[in-house]
Length: 390
Ligand code: FAS
Ligand code: PHB
Image (cartoon, rainbow, N blue to C red; front, side, top):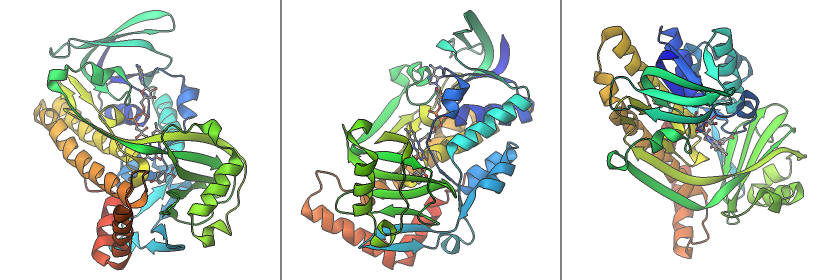
């Protein structure tokens, strides 16, 4: 098989890249390890930056987001038994975020690739990358019992943190930066009406909690749990009891609880691969970086990577220029590190770690009190939350 760009990974990054390339006359083949049903069953991100919504509209899947997404003009900070609303739209002169589940967004991407006859191979096994430092790279894999070889001009590694793409880069060409937190987020999806009409991040001495939603009948809640906790350690009743202790009473006294239809624990960590490019291989999305979900950035960063990479492929195929491809890694990394900074700042400000000293706890309270009392501090948070410019 031959294509312009072989894309490894059929998550949001890979599918969005494939669609944008197709709209610009650049062919691609997507190789996805899981079944489509498995990919579309994942419950992950929920908050889309303005730039992400614009990219989805460019990709031709903006309609459902516009119809079913929730525009949020503020975010709430739960602190000292009160919800403090930060006027995001006012502080950023009109920017907002949209609440629309990554699950729905991925469904839309699979649907439009089917409608546009995109080549998306699911259930693919044993993907291997070859000849990356030549101008004739290729990928091999097994699909439906057949051994395939895909000859291409470029390979886009959109295969997430555990995929084979980053592993194909020699360690001599890769600086990896890691940070792990001693806690994760236990998330619950429940078919209950959201308790508030904004996303609320709650700081509490028992630990962090988050109120979010997917639609008017589907709520998404999280609590910080120690690393090593397993989902089986937490019954629904235990979750709701702990959640109610960590949010302001105005939420605890009005929340409608219900059985979890999904319950999972995501570890909190940060990771950046400094070099997202090796020869004809380019990394995008979680293959190149991981951010703690506190700033709602993982999915949004994958989208900005796809913006930079698709623009670079367009300038190669339309003007024959390799300049943007050569600059892709440094350009994308500049925005990635700024977003990592923001996500780590939010995580530190809102979570208490077992190692937090009494001194650090007082500083954390002062941090939140300063944020809530300073227009400058709230503006900084708001402009990062809606998404830094591409
Ligand atoms: P993805 O991991 O989504 O997709 C990579 C794809 O590559 C997968 O479909 C995988 O099956 C495939 N793949 C892997 N190895 C392969 C191989 N060998 N061959 C072929 N295919 C292969 N972000 C937020 O903003 N907010 C959140 O609340 C949030 N919660 C999260 C919860 C969890 C449990 C996880 C894991 C992530 C969460 N994220 C969140 C981050 C998440 O949304 C990612 O940023 C987003 O999925 C990134 O998209 P991709 O880069 O496409 O990676
Ligand atoms: C979610 O709705 O899943 C969500 C919202 C905000 C975050 C992380 C996750 O920061």
